[in-house]
Length: 407
Image (tube, rainbow, N blue to C red; front, side, top):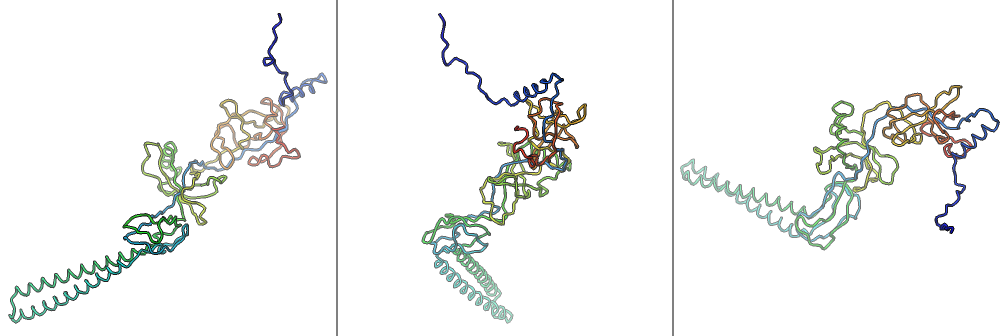
């Protein structure tokens, strides 16, 4: 009996899927061997660029938030009913600008009473001084006793003290009257109006609105412990001053921005590392004349992480991967002249302005293949190189709109 094979178990014939490397290799082999002669690998067309050697500095990247430098909660300092609101929600305010008015009639009456008490105290003080002067003149004529003069002196002193107390009550009443007009304590932007005309408020409660300063602003972020220790080491060695002592530069970008277009300076590093998170708080200051930075916005921050040094840079697209190794192809001279592609293992550093720093593996004068790497089948293969700029390897692609490594 012949067993039938289930349809689902039958192998499907191989389709004409794209196998560019295998097809190209077979085509080259057939062409080279068709005449019965020795096999010769034609040179692969590639683009190469000389490495760039520049003075660079490392930048470390963090995440943070925009914060207002000054923020004020506007609260009433006296009790009463709000009688007027003099600003618009969200408006820009000037320091001292009138915001709210509270019914001032009780406080004007209290001030009138205090002023009347002061007038009464000053009158008693004048009388006491006059009687003291009369008693002293009579004492010189032995018309009164020394005890009576002493009593007049005590009365004059008490009258003077009463006058001082009355003046203090007048000053207190004037201060409370001034509190019925609530003004902006800082320059900035107003928040929402939380209570309007007709509402009764108490001393210190509730919040009427908020005001946040506009220009400049802070961007607060947290640095990890390893970066903080590296910054300390650089400060001790004199490579880069501490951000506690110097206004080190920072670059900032908002969530919808490419790169880091805004420049600022460091103004604060906290005095202790948070043991719960292993991070330390830091702040930078940014100019904000056009109001672009609103408190609470997310921001990306780059902080200068090293001093200036000479470095070799290449374009990231030139870097290839072999398991855990990174390598590039560099141009070398073949045994019969012409260029060959040589593999060079590299150790990479940070990316700076779209280029990657090569810590080990390349030197000034090396020319690196940046396009057409997939046409190089083995190290030492002959190549026909067209020179391009390292920082713009695709700027001049010739008549073919494809990159060489896509062909």
